[in-house]
Length: 157
Image 1 (cartoon, rainbow, N blue to C red):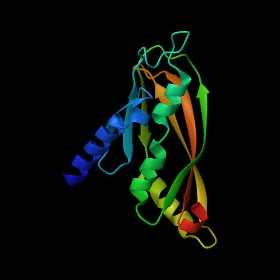
Image 2: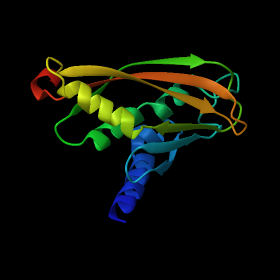
Image 3: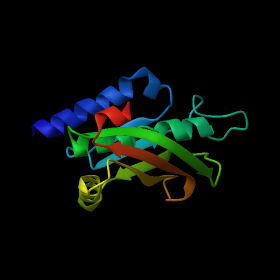
Image 4: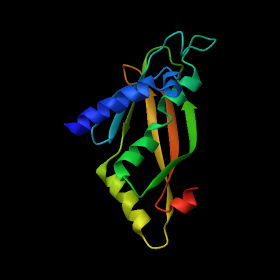
């Protein structure tokens, strides 16, 4: 119960935070265990570019922070997580509301912990992909994020 309330408060916080609010995106759901997040990017006057399609910067910015946040919340204390790089591939102009769903599995989280616990491994890079899709499921853009994870606070600085 408390985790569900906390997740709703985080959702509200994201949607009110000026830097995220400016993207035009809205967080519609955060799972209490932080293993799923859903985002909606409406096609409005604020997210349109000069030619009337959804601005690519809004597409990217609306999905930018979530894999990093999900890993921070699911891995817990003792791990340092940073966004390292990103790539966006535009596939079709957006003329409608777009949606993105971020998911982390227990297996992915366990694999990260195990890899960092292995001898000689103090930092890893993980790659995640999320699609921006319309109501019919048509992919308009694919974002690939590289996230850096370490257990060594000194190395992360």
